[in-house]
Amino acid sequence: MSFGGPAGQIALLERELLQRRQWIRADDFRDGLAVAALLPGPEALKLVIFCGWRMHGLAGGVFAGLAFLGPSVLLLLALSIGYVRYGAVPAVAAALQGLAAVVVALIAHALWRLVPRFLAQRWLIGLALAAGVLFVALGVSFGWIVLGALLVGVLRARLLAPVGAAAQEPLFGRLHRLAGRSVTSTIAGLGTGLLLWLLLAGALWAAGGSSDQTPLRVLGELTRVSLVAFGGAYPAVAFANAEFVERLGWLTAEQAAVGLALAETTPGPLVIVLQFYGFMAAYNLPQPFSAETAAVLGSVAASTAIFLPSFVLMLLVAPFIDVLRRDPRIFAAMAAVTAVILVAIADLGWRFAVAVLWRGGAIDLYGVAIALLALVLLTVRRIEAHWVIALGALLGFARTL
Figure 1 (cartoon, one colour):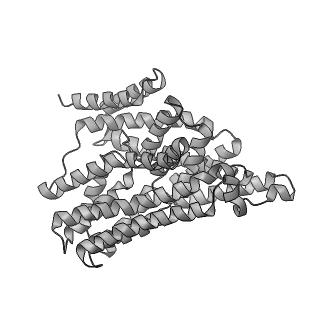
Figure 2: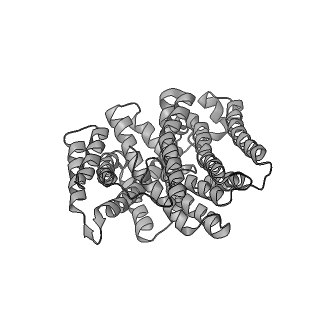
Figure 3: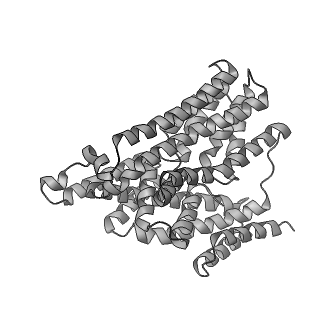
């Protein structure tokens, strides 16, 4: 059900895990969202991994992340194969248009709930407004805004902290002891992630008999993109587009646009478009494999490169969040980051609403009606989200009758 990019996915997570099922606390959701923004990679995936870890430890984090990714990875692979076999992208179904209108309502409903909860202090409101001006009006990169919010939170907590050595004692030298974890466990986590990456690289090398093959090179290029993809999906897609289309020439600008269209109409994180990049790059340059075999291998390599770092980083950081929360400087920094994330969610929600509800230079009144109905059902009637989503798809389909 996670259509609509990171804003829609975070909105749905908030409704399902926090509001409806009450599986995690609001403080945990806020801290997970803040940490997800500070680490490279797709925010929604990292938040899902953190929520799974918070509920059921390591296994919970791994299974939650895989369950979140599985449908989108498989669906996009099937659509990619259809694209290269039949040479055209199927038109966006009317049912998806109705579903997209419901996503607009989901984002609005989530902001209605999150803003009072996470902007409870005046300085956070001021910070969010400043972030909105910088991000929306002046076009400042969101990565810089997150860094600035982090510094503002730390400085504010430092200025307001009581004077004394105890108040300023750093946590980082004793994080493992306070969290009840050994340094060995952290090293083992890093080692496991590296081993998985090396196993895939070794398998690709053995299958192709050479390091000069596109799937293996896709793995290396997209791993580099993933590790520096601060600020969410859009910076990662822009970076990968510059590498794959402009510098390396592995796929055309038209193929890159097709991939974005496919990613926008499938559930899961928007950064899944990079799986299509890997698929098409290997399909265009398949040697020594057949074209479709190379494409599937490129897809697997791309998915691993995009998502494995998010699993490793979030599962390594998650056990220390409770300890870091004790330091007022860390707590204030996380609160500040969460405040500016709400600005990004609102901006993405607005852009998504315009794209969905403004068609052909005019307001799509039918789509607006679906969105308003969904908002009433979610907010007033408190209908569960999956029923509202199903209704939106049916109403969208009914439009064609």
